[in-house]
Image 1 (cartoon, rainbow, N blue to C red):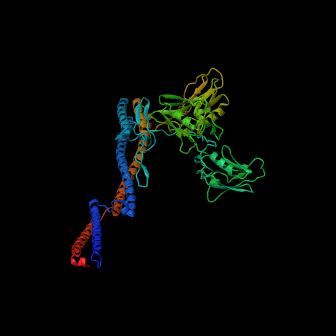
Image 2 (cartoon, helix red, strand yellow):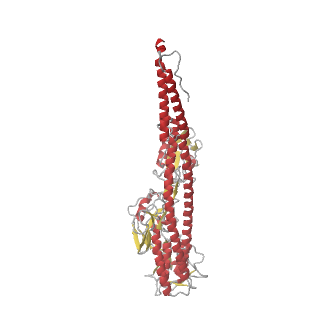
Image 3 (tube, helix red, strand yellow):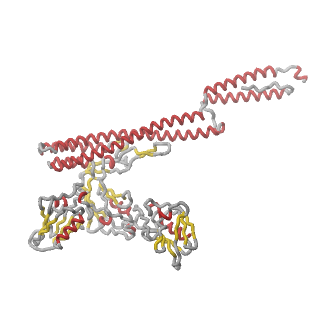
Length: 639
């Protein structure tokens, strides 16, 4: 540390004193600053002392704060996962016990009383399984989805109802705001929601002015990217920027505002059109991309047919909750003039669509009913799905004298229903040769061979062809099932008989008596929740009734469900490993960030001590020098 000289030749005493005071003051300030650094451990006390380092420290502090929040989220998520894994292990252990009981009870050596005793054990396993499904971590139900403050499973009179949803809790687990799920809902692990009742009908909404651009699949099926297009009538060219348009109506308005005067934009139920305007029949239409965009291609405007751009294109809007019933079926609309009936277990609920205008209205009517059913849009944005929340019960969706369920594509038994899907996937069994005989009131016998038939409509067509007008077959307009009507008269009883011991009429649901010349079959294509609760209830009921075949079917369901639960447990174990690895990485990153933060914010103690000692030594030297130099004598006054 340099010592500022105060022994200046031929200067006044006042100047020497000033230099002395200035030097001592500077060294005292330096020592005070170093003392503050040693006391606080910081290089500076205000950003103005070191703006660059203060800025960098702020960046590191925000990073540390973000990392800390992510670490806290990870600790919470890992705690929930640990509880969830324990619950999943308990559920699989219970189902393993049930699988053992199913295997034992399928033996021919057990009596009805012994199977009845095993049913009590299965019932106990069912209650324990419900308790596992309702397990909590702190105040949160593990398997309820977003509805984590509400008990997800409840044993009711006709089954086990799931009151949660199919969502998962997510948390930000990285400083870059990456989010990961850390729960499994009951619909995932317990399969507490059925497979969908889905028709083959694409409800296919037509294009309207209020259709959102984001809801268009476009001509490529990958959506519409809006940008600039170049439109010419052969004489005048306009470059039109369509970016910012929110709806199809906005696009048409922008086009009409900027098109050459001889052209106009319009729309039909499928496409946006650019065509010659009134009185401009001779004008040509040419549409190109402006630059490297894909707007004209996505909107189908590159295709010109009959002098009209877009005439052969289909923008294929997605089905959304906002889609109106009038816009469905390519703009032709559908009329839901009749009710539908949802039967789910002991529930028999009519659903009225009077006044419904949009798909959202339809979904709300179904979801607000007491049918334990859940309606939503399919992932591909084309259909309505209806699922059951009630394990252990059969879900049917039927007509109530009209065709509303058919129009919506949610009727559980339809003409296009595959035989392989019926009877819980066990199909319709046939034998070689004819499978059943229809006997009319006139005594005529109509033999039907089901071999080669794969859908309900094909069977209806085969019966009508074989009946020759004596018998007509169709789906019943009320309820669900195959309806046979005797068009003859006579003293014989209208009936259906088995041939060759074929089980086909049982599997088709027409092994029933006629009523006034009409045989109304049952719906043998129900939707059933494929959950452990369903499997346990089926096994319990089969044991109580001493039905060995049903015990075998229930045992197969137990095995299938357990396999899916093991897969779900494996996915959650992988997620737990992923989050654990993330937590270790975050700890390392936090440590490294703290080191860098310390480098720009914290003082080097050793360096500060040395500096303080240097300042102290310099101060002492200045004071000693001053005491000699400032010692006045007579010569000072003589000068």
